[in-house]
Length: 82
Image (tube, one colour):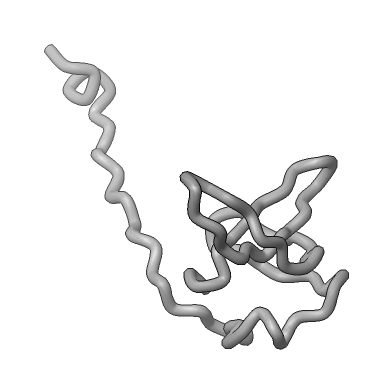
């Protein structure tokens, strides 16, 4: 006998997230941002824009948007993936 049979629970359907942004303005370019602006990342939530930094990852230099979250948490998003 399974847990589902024992408790007669129905299996929940998982809803798939859509990529559509409703009631929000999508950033077309990081150049539209000012240091200190609040932004919303689809997966990480509300953060504050701190500027653009060039980082070396795997011997490749790329520009990243630096975002600060609560506390000392930071996220670097490649500018070519906006």
